[in-house]
Length: 432
Image (cartoon, rainbow, N blue to C red; front, side, top):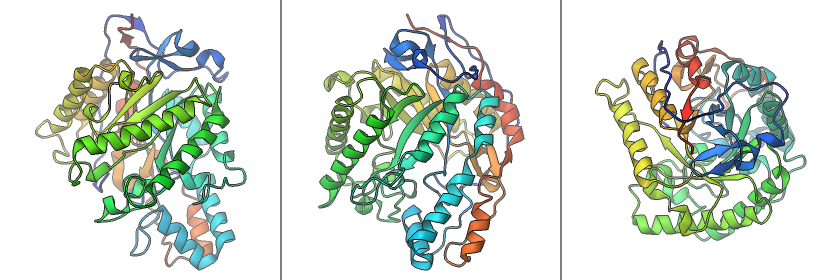
């Protein structure tokens, strides 16, 4: 995602319906998710009762820059020597030491997302939140688990479940970085492929093995938990260098699909029940027919961003999404489809039509993202004051004070007034 300044929108969301059986929307009781709510894939649908019950269309958002900060949208300032989560932590340790760095990170994470944010999501009728995280939330570089490694994520899953909201656990940043971009925790600048040491270089195999082991630990911890909708294996593999690398498609596919298969097998040996989510970067052609590997109970994920026609003056936002949906339909994989990240940018009619496209085409979706600094408007359902924290120059006390306010936000009212009904509108699925 790239820096753009966008205006707020005021639209009324289009409600789409088609013949078939009803689907569960975002409105859920407060009793919490139970065993009967456990989701499994049944053909192209996610269904309760471990695949035997009511079909569910996930409609929600991402928790955004909570565990992995992207400075363009967060309250932290990008500076010469602080460009990503890795350099941010390194600079904090250099200035204040390990213990005070941990104190600051905890301050940020404790305040960025609170029970109020869950209540906000509940009030919107959101039924799913995708949580981007990175390996350092759980382990050190050698794969040693941190003390209380799951404490914060457990809290998140419990709070979501209590409000009838599913959680998707998203590996946004893998060991070595799977894309060399800031959202993986390590930004390679103009040399993103070179920095992508999860795939390339002499440490790639070691990083992949650490990745498998971490997913095994996550699977062991959350197996049987009905609030977890699925395990999102790897965010945006290759990402921006996908189409300018020297490697042909066949090579990139072979490498990625082999990693997906190994991760699938390692998880399935521990957790036979949760949906495993595999991402295409960027199109259905970048994923195999699941029958090729014998994968079952999986969901295929896509992301969609278009910056060229930011205001949709030429209809680019909608035609681009239609193209993606048409490709998904043409591939005709017998799995649920999920638009895990997207933004319709600046045009109110594009939001109106675009959300209708996703819902009407039976695609699960989570917007990017829940909250952003106000200068980025419609990238967030909620906005924050643009109070930037300067890691290189602010004192320890100033950083802590600013990060204690990292979660303060307010409704992006015109956006929410426009799309509020899109989370809860009655829809019909063609599930037979």
